[in-house]
Length: 291
Image 1 (tube, rainbow, N blue to C red):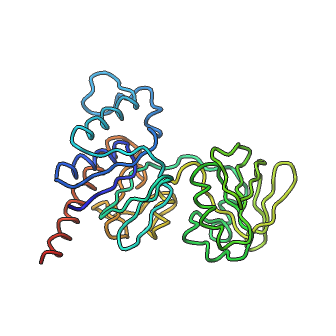
Image 2: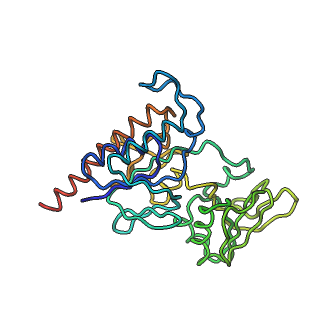
Image 3: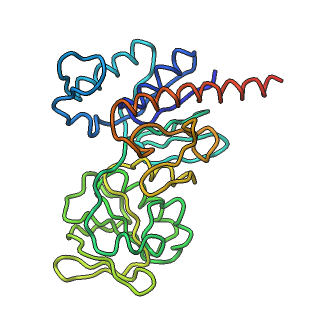
C-alpha cells in the first residue's frame, strides 16, 4: 500500500489525512507545533461551534480525530524535501520516503527587516542551499538563522564552500553548532554590494565579506520546502492547480501556503480537496503498475 506524508498538523493537514487514511492509505502527519492558529484565543466564525473555541482546542480536537482513525503523528521539525526515485521528507531526526507528499505548513507572516535582503534575491540571497550551493563553490557564505533549519542549510554548504558562518541576528543559537561552522551573533543591519552581495553589515559597525547569504530563519516554511524540490512558487505561496497539485508529480499543497483567504474554512476545504486528489493520483499509479 502506498504511503502519504503530510507536512503540517493544522486544519489543512489533518483534513487531508482524514480522507487519505479512510481510503486505506498509510498516512503520516509530521508537525512540530500549533503554529499561528494555536495562538488564537477565541474563534467564533467557524461552522459548528455554538460558543467560541480556542485555536489550540480546535487543533487538539482535529489531531485526536486523526489518531482515532489510525493516522500516525510524528512531532519533529521538517528541514528538507527532495526526490531520489521517490519523494523524501527530511527532518532533524530522520528521513522519510513517500509516494505522495502534501505541504500544509501554513505561511510565514514575518520577514526580517534587513536592508538589501529583498533587493539581492537571486544576486547573493538564496533560500535553498541544496539548490544553489553549486554557485558558491570555494566562496565565503553565510546562513541567516539560529535553529535546526539553519544548521541543516549550513551543513549542505560546508563541503563545497570556502567558509560558512551562521548569522543569528542578535539571538543566541538554539542548537549546538557543528565544528567547522562559524557563528556570529551580532544583529544584522544590511547586505551590501554592487551587482551582487559583497558583505554583511552589523549593528556594531563591523562587516563580514561574503558572496552569498542563505536565509533559514525559524523552521523551514512552505515556500522554502517547495523551492528545495523545484516546485513553482509565487512570492511566499506555493503555486497549485485546481486539484491542489504542484508542478512536481505527487506533491500537493493546501491551506495558507497556497495564498488567498487565510481562514480555517479555506484550509479545511483545500485539505479535503488535496486528500481526494492524492487518492486518485495513487490509485491511478497502482493501476498503471498492475496493467
